[in-house]
Length: 170
Image (cartoon, rainbow, N blue to C red; front, side, top):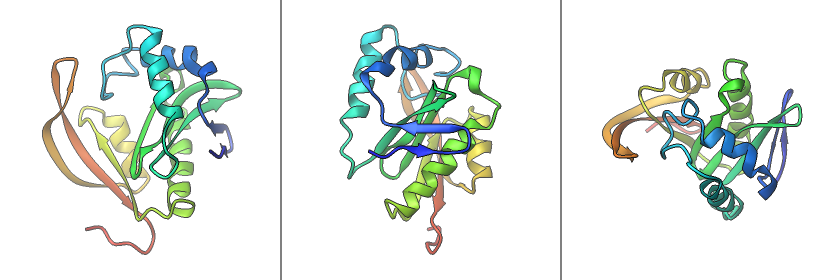
């Protein structure tokens, strides 16, 4: 899998050496507030997550660790084409890192993978992510109630889509 370098970030393949850094994020209540699973309780959960990231078939998706100044600050990618997902350590919020990483991922999705669109499924309470995706040009395609059961709590979804140039929103 390729590495992606932006002005401030390196998006690179995950390795087993990233488990502790990713566990700091996946066990953080604020980071996981709108994620599709509850916060990780122990390292074994994060180890399984890392193994799943490492075993993605490159024809079906790709997921990257996000580094800034040599430190892991999150993960972002298209775990399964064409859906984009991202999570950053709360210490990295509000600095434009998510926008920088997603811009590079979207560019790669359209130029390298030739995807006609990139989709996102966002909890409507996650206003910051909704604003970010809409700033990047994503359009709301629909909403649905009770789409995710996270730790016994039902969550809703806002579905967004960004079309590549030359494709129409349907």
